[in-house]
Image (cartoon, one colour):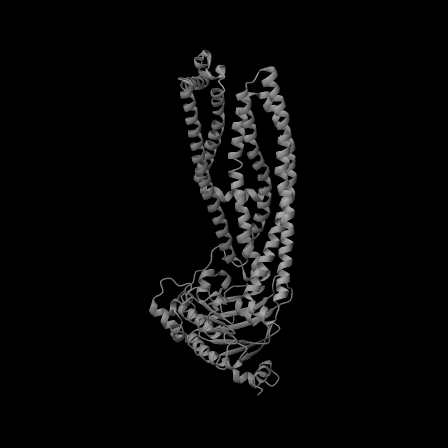
Length: 617
């Protein structure tokens, strides 16, 4: 239950609405009981049971106990006597009309209170789930890149959507069923006891059996619910992968393979859902059957009290039966509460796994605040390996880069180029060693300030399914149109944007699918230019472009690098000839360092081999 108590902690901001919902639940249960109780005088009137219809004088005018301890009872007796005196005064037609009006009024109030209770509970439920979902989403942005490297995208999406929905279903189960239903049972139980305590005691024989069944089923459902959410996460992951990679699926003719894989997953999900349904749905019929068994015996016993012993009149027995059978639906509802709580706890554990993951990359307790880059960046004995791998990706990197320099990283795939520049904005932290910015360890710098100094353009351009304008101005509030167009022109993007159906208001599609690779890249560069950071990171920004696009993008990149400290990762060596320094990496170590012409003179150097491979024609 510890997990579920944590779920309930999200209700605190909605205490007022919850209190209102509970209050209306009490009124609903009370009016529900009153509406049934009013059937006694109605039946007495219809069947002319005179003794019951006309209350005795001692009931109408009870003796008043003047002791202070019984004042509350006295007031209750006076109110009851006055009510009966009013209700049973006049002709039988007038009495019948009064009773019908009271029943109508009771049902009206009951339904009004039921509506208000449901509304306030929905406010609490939806508000709490919104907060849980928002907190999970916000926390995701705090987690390091290594977390996303190890987690499936579909699994994370499933946790914030499907699992949170399962949690939502249990909130109303607790505060609706655990408040309104017990009160309904209590009020009807009180009504039943007031009519015949013997019959009531006899009818409660089913309770121990019901509790045992509920507990057993709840334990099974908790385990199965966790498995169900994992199956749904697998389905979501497959959907995400095939939709985003639909071009590859079609190109390789793998539609049948993907269809078969998806059907296998949905079949597994289907079987588990049916298995859960068998277990979940057995609680209610078992409870009801036991109730009916006791109910049958109760009708026989009550019939003897009416027909033989004459200790109970017919109208009271009928209302007693109604009261007992009115208790059955809430008892059935309560039998499902524990099951829903167990299912919810299993889903909540998956959500809380995200929230309980501590961000490995975060600010120190008293971070240094900076607003500019002044002198240089130093790598001092920097080594790095990923959490799940003992092999060093970077090994003892020592490097100093002055402000305004353009530094290019070259090497074969897996040499550590991208990892090296990923350490600068603290997407990862070094396993050992440190990186200094103007003499300050970047771990000591406020993370937000550090990243404001940097702009990044990658090979895989990330655009959002919004307008061209919003993609260029991403992260910048109140950007003027002049600044936006100026950045687009510098990135060689302005002309093609004007040719789009709605210009800068054109929606680019998911990941910018409505644009070509070169167009997407130029928008990405325009975004970096608009941010205007002093430090730029260009990760293979032209490697996937055709020659014409590469020329346009390269021109934009040259404008982007002007008067900025730039770290470039490039497979196409022609784009880095003019770099101030070229760092050649091999197996995580710096093996060459110099300018383009200097490195070509080293006969057995890796750089010369790479250059000759690219320009062998």
